[in-house]
Image (cartoon, rainbow, N blue to C red):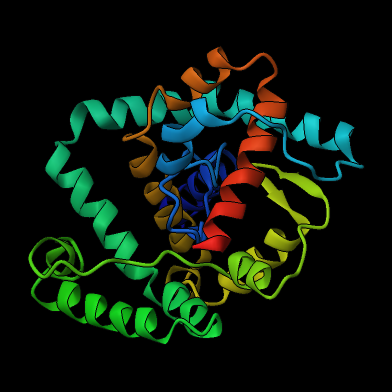
Length: 253
C-alpha cells in the first residue's frame, strides 16, 4: 500500500511538472514541453522570421501568465531533471527511447495523413511502422528510415483541420503544454484518443511513461529555449509568432 501510494504521488508530481502528452501527438515535436510545437525546424529557421504573424490574442493576460508559469517550470524542474538524466544516460539509449515513442505515435500520423487525403504517405507510415516494429525491434531502431530511405510525414489533427481551411481561432498558451491555438487545442484533444500510451492502466503508469518520454526528448534540446529567449526582444511575442508561422508551413506541406 505504501509503495503504491508513493508511486501515485510521484506520478502526480511528474504529471504536473513534466507532462507532455505525446500528442505531443505532434511527434513531431521533439520538443521541450514549454515550447511544444517549436521543434528543430523552427529553431533552425528562427533567424529568418522577419514579419510578425497575425493572430488574435484576446486572452493575453491569461496567456502571458501561462507563459510565465511554463517558463518557471522549465528552469526550476524540467531542465534540472533532463540535465541529470542526460549526464547518466548514453546517447544511443536516449536515441533508442526517442525512436520508440516516435514509432508508438504511428496511429496519429497514419489517421491524419489519411484524413488529409495523403494516401501514399499514409501507406508509407504503415510500411515504416511494420519495419521498425520488427526489424527495428519495437521501434528502438529506425531501420525504415536509415536502411530503406522511407520518410515519415508528421501530421496531427490540428494540421488536418487547417488543411480543411479551418482557421486558428485565437492564440492560446496551455499550462505545461505551451503555445497553441483554439484549433490546435481541439486537435490535441482528438489526437489524445489516437495515442496508445493514453490507454495504459493504471493512469499513474501512463503518466509516468509520458513524463519519461518528455524528459528524454528534452535531454536533446537543452539550451535551445535559452538561446531563443536570449535572441528575442520579447520572448512571449517571438514564441507566439514563431509558433503560428511554423504551423502555417506544416499545413502547406
